[in-house]
Length: 66
Image (cartoon, rainbow, N blue to C red; front, side, top):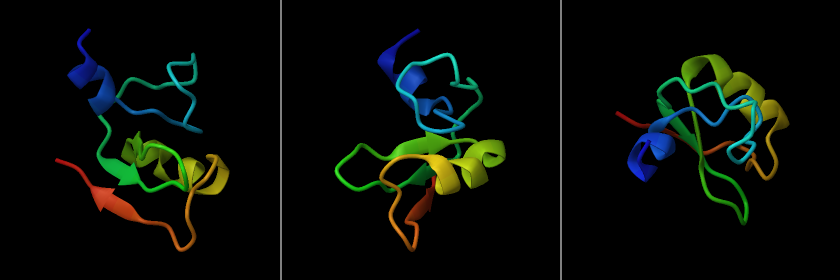
């Protein structure tokens, strides 16, 4: 797996770095976080990431990624 593929996969549900909680689906949204890299998540994990991930800004900054 290349870095590009791992960066495009979902980091949900809570933004763990390469942990077992990563779902592996394609990340369609990027959530801005304070002093952290943006969190890329799939539609299923967008809600849980907004509520539970560390450093998520409020109001949330969400970008649709193709």
